[in-house]
Image (cartoon, rainbow, N blue to C red; front, side, top):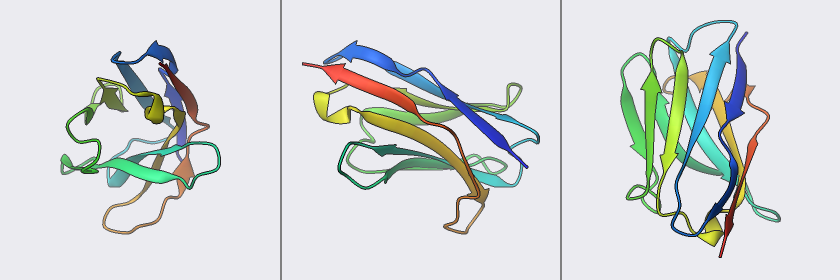
Length: 119
């Protein structure tokens, strides 16, 4: 069992930066793929980035890859989403999720953290 806790959200002005954290407890991320999603009101939850923890390989959605970076801290068992040049359309609840590598299945979800970008 893995518990995921997101943090780092908040209110930022257009052009600002935030770094979101997804910390795991209960077990390590070893063998898991960790993903970041976001969901704005009235929209579907969209995948932003993914990392295969043990391999260190990453994927970032084309529409945000010039501004968002997924990274990790092995010692802290934490995955980050660094976001720069934020825009009002980035306003959403951001979630991290974890599941088996190579399978589009997410067994564990965090509670979400709100990101609001003011114009």
